Length: 337
Figure 1: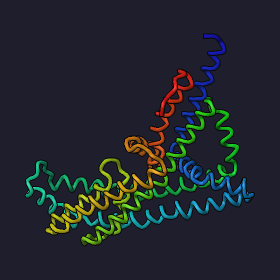
Figure 2 (figure 1 turned 90 degrees about the vertical axis):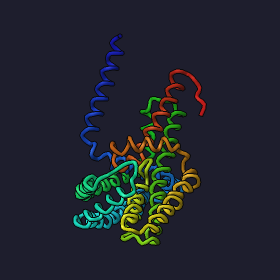
Figure 3 (figure 1 turned 120 degrees about the vertical axis):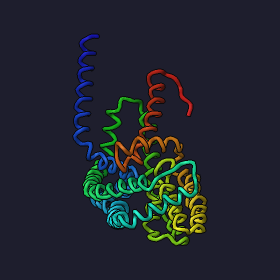
Figure 4 (figure 1 turned 180 degrees about the vertical axis):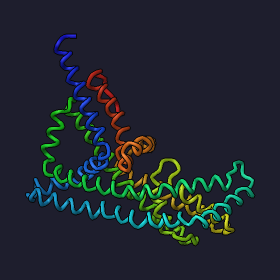
């Protein structure tokens, strides 16, 4: 190894060490950075059209987009947190009623002589774990607000200097321009698909579920409908995490007819919303393979929090894309899509 190679290696190691150190210290603010990137990708084309083609003032246009982002994204999330979590905490904090319900459900399960058994103590332990997690979620509101403000702050400067920023990124990326464009297209497709598709899917299933809970006499049907929509983005089980226990509860209190019909409604209608949207609207936004989405969410949520629903699948797509780029750049092997 000659001196030039040694210098290059030392420089790369220093860059990596500094990058890791900075990333480690700023890890708590990653959701804000990723949120800014998401919003930038969503509004970039419209902003460029208004400022470059129609001659709008840059800082004024950027301010209007920031205001729009607050109204469309930040404000609904804040209102949802403030309205939903206290109600959920109230439901879980009534320990006496909760224990009676759990004992009733456990007794009913034992009477059914199912191949599996679960005691009231086990159910109570699960409920206590959920109850204990609510204050932590409530406490996370401040962190969400901090990252939200950071996202909007970064977005403002990304919009003002967007063209220069993209030019520098392309200049410092050690890849052919065609491969850089492929990476950008994959990023744009994945972000749009998840950033728009996930809220649309969650809201649609929340509405469908709330209607079903209202029809079949479930108390606090709006609360449980919203929770069903939120859990719809969880891989594999999805909204079943909410409606299956509700059906079991209705069956345990003797409302067998409502339990059966709600289960049918939830499986066919609430679950059907997912299938209809995935093969219509979501397919047009970006035809992302379900396995990529599922694995990405499993990996991304522990890393990035809520933003992992967008950037987790993006990591999987990047891995596949970079393997393709490597084969083209360094092996010289053409890769069929």
